[in-house]
Structures are given as structure tokens and as C-alpha cells.
Length: 518
Picture (cartoon, helix red, strand yellow):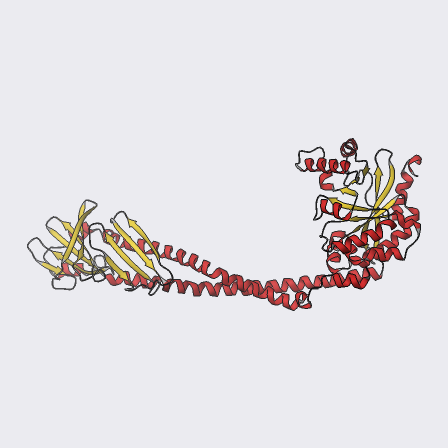
């Protein structure tokens, strides 16, 4: 399969899919769309929360209406009255202590039938139903007036002191004003005293086409039930408020997200440019971590690990550039550069050398192209470790590449077996017969970690399938002994050596016993 055929088979995204300006628009719009989707739910929540708070206020206000009379100390007020309905009595009836805003009129009725009120002459009134309560041993009759409907009906209180009476008729406009102050045109209030006719306050006709909320509160001391209703007016007022808040928040989030995105884009572009300069300056160098046969202590090979030593001497950690290099395709020229350096180092190295590759290496044909220009027999000592960070999407290309390269190299190994996308599928479909056991499984040795059972299963699978196995992350003698007892003899890890630059690796060789230097 030639290069043109490979390129034709590769998936190419339309340019508009990777356009940063399109991404910017989507990032900006997304919070606004999310806010729009959340608005109905948040509006309902806000409406219910406000409704509950307002009902609390109404309950408190209603309960305090009668408390206002108690606070004046009715008994003391009766003691100040002369019970003659003279000017002094009328003045006292007009005083704020007996005529707060809630009072429509207050009338003194004497035992001899004489009557006088705070408005001067007696007031004729009619109660249709009444019931008696007792406050501080005083009898109080609560009554409702005769009316054509619930909205016209009022509440009256009759305070008894012997044969004398003090009749109070409440001002319904106070409750209407209270409801309007909470939300103009939003509420309808039903007042129901036990055994009395109901009263209705607030809006006469409640629009409930879209929503209706209703809740009741019982005031024990008055034996009264307050039922509050709210409909579309409250909903749309809360909706407009929530919409403004959500829109402002969404705009702020959108701007912040766009700023973050362009900072991230700039960082990526900057990193890409730095990597490209690093490639041109040959700043990417190989480090080698020895792989030891634990039975003999001999070096059988080493894994080559890419390191980036910048021109200023700073050593960049792999996790800071490898993911971006793989995503951007820059991993290919890095690999080409690093393989050339490994090729130059091979005469000084012991055993084989494995280099990490990803799906993109196989799908691009880079390896076969590199081997076609390096026919020296020493390249037979180069091996490749296929990592599973990203899945192979074009198996035909990958398989063709492996078939072309396998006769020319040492072998292919499946790196970090059991942690990635392919696993057993890669072994079967690609014909790989060598696996590397990841450090996460090696670390379970000597612990109660459940992944210890996975380690044993991987080893058992490898032995039954006659796989060549290398254990990574070997750091303790207990791990060495456990793996050896299980038949895994090739070890890689800090128990033996950390990744080393070439000169340090050669020093490591020199430190081996003479019979292990090979």
C-alpha cells in the first residue's frame, strides 16, 4: 500500500470543524443556551420560594392584627373609658392604641343601649356568624359580616367586659394593601375561620393558564386557615427577573470561557511552535531504562523514553508535551528524530531497545519509511511498544504496517497491557506476542488491592499464551521475588535503575559485575 493510498484512507475532518472562530462562537453561545434551558426550572423554583416567603409574611401580618389589640391592653383601655360615650370616650376610641390602621371602625356599646364610635355616631352592622375565643380570660367574639360575596365580607371582633362591649370591624383594604405591596396583582387570599363564612382578598380573578400555586397555613391561636393562591402574574414577574439574572450570568460565563479558550489556544500554539523549534534544534533526546533478567542479573534490553532538553538546559517533563504532540501529529517528526539518535547509540547499547509508538505511527507508515532508509543489521535490535492511549481506528493500515516492519525489527510489544483501549483485541488482531505489565498492577504486590487478582490473571494469560512478558515499575525486592515466582523474569523499574541518559547508562553498565556486562 503506497503513501497516496494511505492518505486516501485517512479520515480528514472538514476545516470548519477545527476552526477556532467556530469554537469561539459555540463556546460563547453554549452558556446562553444552557441558561435558556434552565430558565423554566429556575423560574418555578424562584416563584415557589417567593410564594412561601410571602405567605410567611401574610401569616405574621394576619396574626399580629389581633395581637395589636392585645398589645393595647384592652382591660386597661376599658378602665380609662367613662362608659358615657362622652367626648373623652370618643377621643379614646380615636386614639392609635384602639384605632390602628387595621381598624375600619371601633364602637363602644354600653349596657344601657347607648352606642358611640370613633367616627362619631353609632354604626349599624350585621354579623351573619360568630364564635367565641378567650384571650387572657377575656371573651372575644369573632364574626363575619353579612355580605353579597366573600370579597365584600369583613371580620369583626367583639370584646366583652361585663355588660359593656367594644366592637371592632377590620379594614379589608389593609390586607389588600399588604398583598399588593408583596406583589401587585399576584395574589388571592382566602381567609377561613372555623365555623364562619369565608373571606377573599387580593385579585378578584386569578390568571392560571400556565401555572397555579396554592398553599395554606393554620394559625392556631385564632383557629383560622389562610389559603394563598398565585398564578401567571407572579410566574411571569419571576420569569423576567430570573431571565435578567441568568442572562447576565451567562454573558459573564461566556466571556470568561472565551478568554480561557483563547488563552488555551495561545498556549497550544505556543507549545506547538516550541516543539517544532525543538525538533529543528534536535532538543529531543533518548533516555534509556534498563530491562534486567532477574535470574542472571544481565541487561537484556532497555526502553527508550523521550526527553526534551531545551536549549536553555531545562528538562521538560514528558506529560507536558507528549499528549499535545500526539494530538497535533508532531509525535511523528519527534519519533523520526529520536529513532535516528537511537540508531546512532545502538553500538554502545546492550540487547534490544524499545521505543513507544501510538496508533498514528502505524497508520501513517512512518516506521516502514524509516526502515527503508536504514538497512544496517543493527536495526534488528529495535523494538516497538504500542501504547493504548488512543485506539487504532484503521486496522488495515496498522496491520499492513506491522507486517512490513516486523521482519526488520526485534518485535512489537503491547505496552501497559490491560489499561487501555485494545487489550486482548490488539493481541489477536495484530498478532503481538509480547506484553508489558503496567506499574499499576505491579504496585499491588504485597497489598490487598483488588487489582492484584488482575495481575495474576494477566500473568496466567501470558504464560498460557506463551507471551514474552516484561514487568514495569519494579521497585522492591518483594516485587522481584513475587514476579520471579510467577515466571515473569524480565523486570524494569527503579529497583534496578531509573531512566538514564546515554552517558549515565554506560556508567551503569560499568557498575555491573564483570560476568554480567556481556
